Length: 344
Image (tube, rainbow, N blue to C red; front, side, top):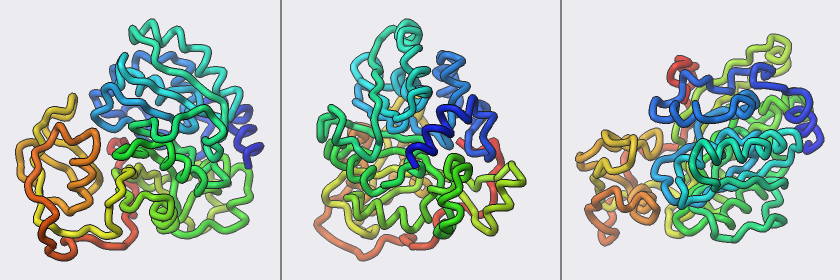
């Protein structure tokens, strides 16, 4: 599988227009506050972007960030601007051709940004322990449409958990299926390279995340993918695929369900470019100044992480009121394709 992926992304794909799905979001779908940062990136870096979502979580100033499967470096260079001169971004990728593009433009971006805080390493995302990376050394780990390409997703998540600080998070976009992908699709080189063959069934991902130490995976956003190549579509039958962004917090006391302790939070509106509201996940859009009831897990995701300074907290864990309303187990994705303008 490594050989297939390296060949597909190193030699077969020359730019994002060569892809056979609409997985890549175009620049018009980027949030307005990120567009000026994107405009500062080198055109060659932008042309070789193969991601499926947006992996720039809020409140990154001064953070140490690891980008898994960084490719030509688009996300790493975006994150470089968000973490600032006091932060650091490290990109990891296994493909020579992609890394060559990323490395070639280090000086260009350092001059543009006024600081040099990015470096790139060659390696495999399921073998992070082989790289010179400090356990518990990262505030945030990101990945953009790469975990599905790994033949050992369990090793990826375990490696991420090992490298995150307590209270750190894995914020990543990937492709998922509405059912388990058949063997014929998994072994098709083109479908694998297009991020379809290696896609996890969404509920298997939930189990894998919990088994790796992330007790409460949170879906941030999602959209149904369109397969734009008729020949590729014919090989997929009734399978449906989704691009989805999740955030997984490394918090020791998270529970397996959303439990109600009568708690609430108030967002202060102090995160740059998020003055009116903060989106924690798909079901938690927290307006500035408004008392917002939360379950115990959500309370911890805000109180025990870098987000704490931006909130006021109400309540504690002294009294339990049962399961928090609305905690369910059905497929979380929207079944209908979303309008393209709402992608990212």
